[in-house]
Length: 175
Length: 148
Image 1 (cartoon, each protein chain N blue to C red):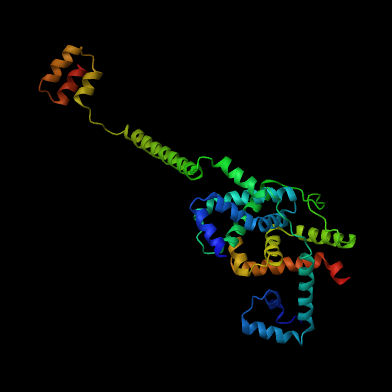
Image 2: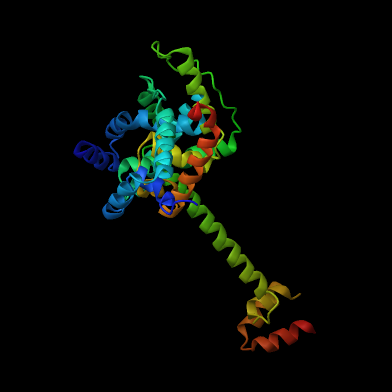
């Protein structure tokens, strides 16, 4: 963490190499969030790239009130929202660019698709809290910082999202 | 009847309750099958979501971004200067518009006419103008003269 702090300070002073190292540290997280929000591999690449470029231009405005990771999640979330609003992308459930786990059975692969589809059916604001909480493990307070809403809103959105997911996955859960 | 603790189950599941309340809900779970079922459902849904295989950024990802940054902001401080320049141009344009408005609205007001302006506007020859301007006439006198 202290390495990250040092890199951040150097990057804020205009050290591009330090910013490159920050990208290396966080690129997988950012790409995964972008992917989970868009459910589209190409869109995730674009969103992740644009998020890092935005982060670079706004680096001086980062005030360390939140962690750098939370701030970067926020930039990614905003970029994804804008991207998805502008580009009415079609979500793809077949991902030829994603490595397939050879140990995965056809049933497991199908189940993964079912879960993906269920998450995809959630409105973006509900999907975002599920992604940040259940995939990324952020606290309610951190999620509130990312989506810039009160903690109470995070709680209610998460409750609604989970209720919806339970309904959508009812067949599997009860089976 | 719905259990009074059911509203707290999400927060309990996420470890977001205060310690004392967390323990209270935990104790409650022993005697409430409805809340236990809720917890089990949350665990199942989360388990399904976590089956997702995380993506890895490709090896050139960082290079591509740094390259793009270099292309977009190759003049070092361009990314800061450009927005500032745009703001400055907008501010100057605003000042110009405001000044134009003020000077335009001032045209309709009474204006003091200088001797030079009257002479220039009159039909006097340049020699007459020189004579007139050398005489100790008031602006009013000159103006009256030009009307004759």
